Image (cartoon, rainbow, N blue to C red; front, side, top):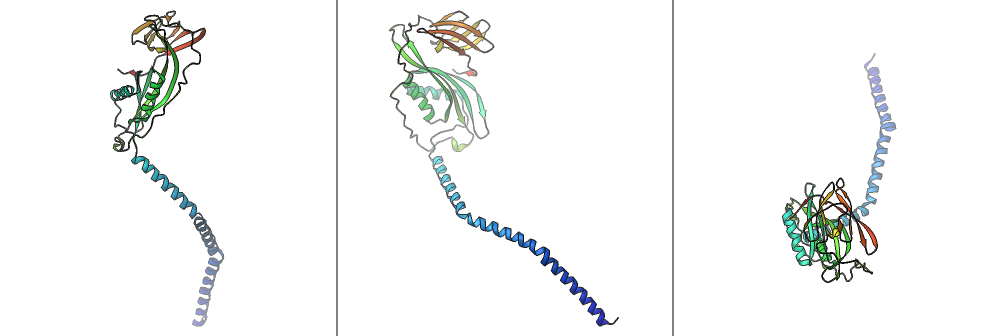
Length: 294
């Protein structure tokens, strides 16, 4: 075979291979790339169309961040590194001094810790005139310490004086209080000033339209609704009465306006039946869980 024929055959084979590769790229590979490129182009076009929305979202987020910075720089609440029960008790006592006469018994329940912050839970039980109690609650929520009232129960009570026979309306309250603490140093001091203004309440919603016709309590008679149940054993209940005196009650014992009907040690409570001027009322006194503070 001559060199001319052999070279011609080799060139023909090379040309055929090049042609086949070109046809494969043109017919199969390039269309797939074109489809992929076309999808990416559409995606970019869609993102370009959404640019105004992204800009609006950025502006809204920036405004929210600026508002949060303003609140942070003007914060007025202090969060101590630890909540010491004695200091919290003293803080609440000072709060009562500026609120007016309010009686309070405070019990420590326990901590709730979440790492960067936490709070101690306390229960408060007491009484006071509506105006004084409203101030006390306002000072708790609006004072320098970060305290939160998580639950609050209020009940009107007609207290009749044995000496003057005068009826005074007291508000009996049960409160659960959270006292916050945090190891974050930035929260220990608040740069802002307290600007909250107390709302003045002009009326007492607990004042009854019609007073009950009830007698004044006898000397040393237990006003069970103003008392605190400390312990219960089968057949006996140990209480602290309205005069802070320790007393023992048994089933059938008389109390102001009624008598003890049941002592339930398994449930940690006693039941009484009271006669409120002809209206029978069942009243339960329950042991408060936690450690009492003095």
